[in-house]
Image (tube, rainbow, N blue to C red):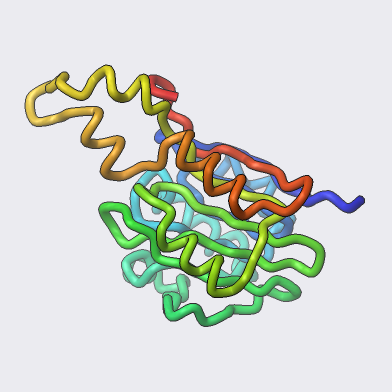
Amino acid sequence: MKTLNYNIIASGSSGNAVRIGNIMIDCGIPFKKMKEELYKVDFLLITHDHSDHLNKITLNHITEEFPNIKIYSTYKVARINKNVVAINTDYLPIWLKECEMYAIEVPHNTITFAYVLLFPDFNVLYATDLKRTDELEEFTEEMQLKYDYVFLEANYDDYKIEGVRNEWHGQYNAYIDSTSRHLSKDQSLKFFIKYKTEGGEHIELHRSKRFY
């Protein structure tokens, strides 16, 4: 049985970069930490403009040292670097060589894309920094998809985050911040179980060091 070639270089609030086949998703870490993986990459997809997903210096290095890598993202990221192609979100496919890619806007506090990658041998979902899966479910149902690999945020444990519901540090509340911007372990697992293929793999992303 064929397996998907992927490498989670980094995932979390300190930085994100994941290679899936010949596609890199996000560049929120120092360039030197992901440079070797870029030799295997033809495309870079950036989920959104937050610094843990988009290191602007790293992006500049990529465009200078790997000019053949095609870069896609939101219109906000495209404003930051002229080499980035802004994606239309109307469920229009973009062909990344043999991979049919779709960008789905998901709820966060800035415009954020999840990516569906339909390779010849695998259906892959990649989504991080989202507070619910409704938009992903709508797309998945419409396209009648099942996923062989689900790379999906599993940021916090519901029981652990409930314990800090009433803890305020100035204007900051970890419960409100986490539940309004991120997906829980339980939400992530429920989506995976509903839409996985037989033998599908669940890869948890963006785990909180404190609340997972």
